[in-house]
Length: 268
Image 1 (cartoon, one colour):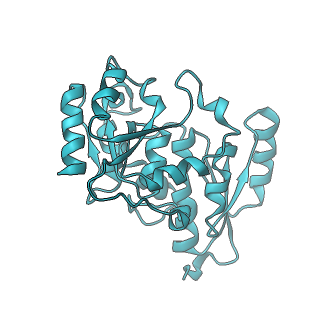
Image 2: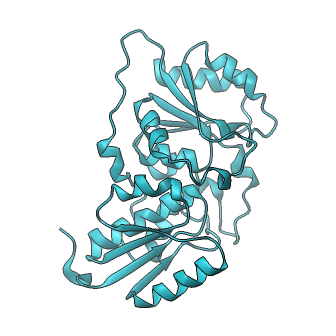
């Protein structure tokens, strides 16, 4: 039961970043209701997340337009709330993002978080002896950092069935605003593992309870705002679920080594 402390009080959580950041911020919306009893409105700018977020009745998800008039309208509407929690303009990278946003909301500081929609999605049922089904994010091409992705995929197909998900790597996430992510989430949930780089698809998979194995080269290209910041503390699903079986691949490991790690993890 929600804590009665915030009963009849209204809180707003405002996500301003990319899809993955918005998923992180929804954890604060959930916690403000569960921990403190607030009526919570969760504001996002990504239409493709609406059906996933609307499955959670602990908060009401509201879409705002990411333009001058839309942001002005949002600013005016926020005056009615007793508490407003904004996504940081720059994440500190001193702790997992979910811990940071929950800290800003003054809620419990657990790093773990599972989207409510995960309870409604069917899981896969791989037949004995069949290859594991991998969902592979297309943005692996965008964050290749010198890796031969085609070679990696060819090696991976020798031990796994691969299903591509996500936008064309040549497109920005902005071009996928009308592409509902719920069907993609359904595919993820049925897979044995998600593979990809740091990014929104990785966070979606992890918050659906899907096992993840991910590339870490992007960590080296993140610049924290302060001297205590360290992307290895804040990024990646293994930081979020430290006791689970998520795997961060060694940065710049060879394709052969990556596939051997994946094969051993999924096939033993």
